[in-house]
Structures are given as structure tokens and as C-alpha cells.
Length: 142
Image (cartoon, rainbow, N blue to C red; front, side, top):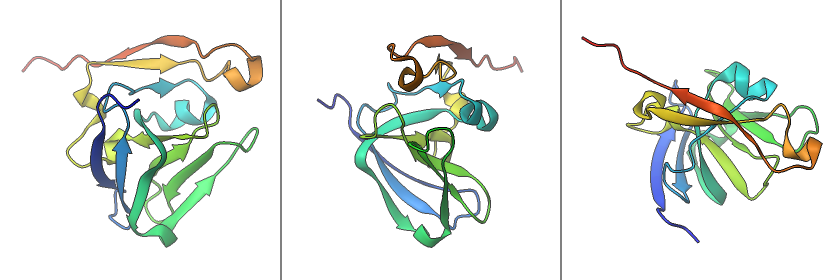
């Protein structure tokens, strides 16, 4: 059941790709991950259910990347290289949307972001997803 459905528009850095994302639980689902790919790209994501990411323009500019099991599909703009979203490995009915690509949203808008343990992924261990920690943003004093 959706608690706080939020529809947001967004796009990549160069503007070639534009999309609309239906966030099933608003920003309550934000997170980061410790897997090798997520760790290197550093994105904060929010969840959208399958069908919850609609490409409005630039579908031809999107390319995808798969690694490890090849289950998760990570999408990014082939022109500017910005990661926009991915279909999750642990629940293929969910898409993770890069909040930095959403209009008017910054990953620094969230004082705390849960970090999930992607190194010990539930698909590899058979155990429930474990929270690895919390990422905190503390603005500098002026």
C-alpha cells in the first residue's frame, strides 16, 4: 500500500533525458548502498514501483549497465554519463531513482540517509537486507 505517492520529474545533467518518477513512498524510502557500483557512484536513491519511471524524452540517449549476476539494470545518459535510475536486483518490481536527478531535489536535502549492506547482498547470502550504517550531512556554519 502506498503511503505517500509522489510524482516528480527529472533528468540527466545535459538535459537529453527527461523522466517522471512515481515514488511509492515519497522520500521515506531514500537510501544508499555499499555494493561496488553504488559505492563508486555515491547516489542517494528513492524507490519507484515497476512502471513508476516514465521516460518523457531521450530514451535513445539512455544506455544500461549490468554487472555481477546481471539482474539489476542501471540506466545512465550516454551523453553526460549521469546515472538516472536502476531496476533493483533484490526486488525487480522496484526501481531506484537518483534523487539528484529530480527537479528541485538535492541529496544534501536529507540530514540522514540509511546505508544498506550491498556487499552482503540478500541475493548472495539468503539473509534479509542489513542496514550497514547512516550517512549524515551536517551543513557548515556560515
